Image (cartoon, rainbow, N blue to C red):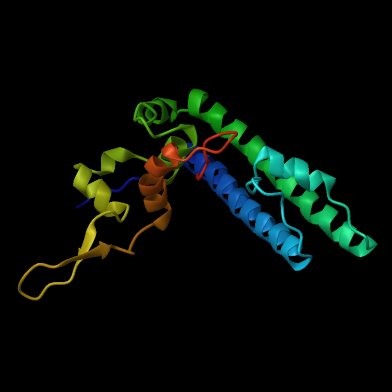
Length: 194
């Protein structure tokens, strides 16, 4: 009989916290798109050389004025909603930082952070979603679990295909995008994908 890992209450609480942050990041993306599309409908473009969502871009957003009151109200609501979401993300990330240092999962999270491209959020997300790494006897089993093993469709000769779409795209995103995000720099900070 094969044993399984049953998540503890601590595991589930950490997973809820990580997923709340993930939901907030999705809300942030939607709010940014909504605001961008609103500006596009009104043919309002940022000054040349100002990249979206940088500090300069937000300063520029604060200077926008609309001739019609309804448009001004809509803009202010969209922008205020985005700022609220960003504050929510900040609060959740502070709680995740605290969990990464003082929670029962802290040793594993800190061990994952010794890898060059794995920061606190990524490490905590992996620990929260996977639970116990002891359920994987080899790295290959772990890679297969998270969907990083190429799929194979063969009848005779082996033919490797793309990465399997089976399992959790969340893991693949964390593991495969994290290294590239390490090298992408904004004028304020590195992009935080997860």
